[in-house]
Image (cartoon, rainbow, N blue to C red; front, side, top):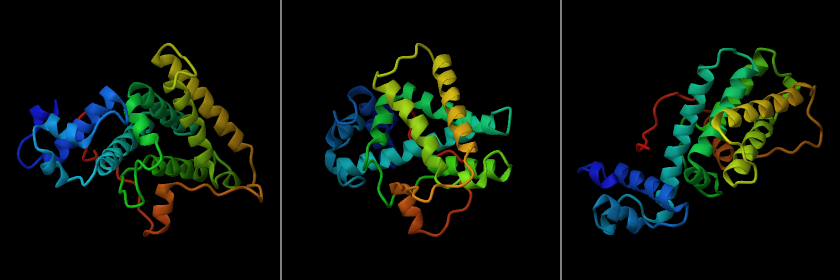
Length: 233
């Protein structure tokens, strides 16, 4: 438990560990900052030195989890045997299986407001996906005309499957089946995008908290693939 791992100078990380454990035990809403403090073995006032509120702790934990997910997506794509859309399928499989394996934590970060416009997440899963779609366009697998907004199309597909599975609206018995269904979905989505030659004139421009933050910040370089400053699972 987090209490066993805490030592002087690491209260911030210990509180993140405790919060993640509480999320898995009780869900996104069934715990408090005070309970996280008790798990660590410190007073609530000590916890408030690092997190001014439960929401602040949730935001910090979400940033850690999303960076961890970004690394997981990178690792999955790097392990893909082919360098075409198979890498995208690997990314989708990693995303959906992560959500199925850790549904309570996934629900926490899927909720609106889990991160803020000031959140710094690297590698961010959104950036990992956009970088891969850019690469597929550069290598000729995806037509340039289909590239604008393609990340939102792919994300909607894999995220939708993840939600259906963790909410129990779709049932697949084992991980192999989940991966197979995800792969089929990603290839179907990608093949549909590959048929586009130019975006429709009325096509909307979706945004997220993360993409809005990027528009207010200097253009980032390639997302580093390094272990995030995360708590242990």
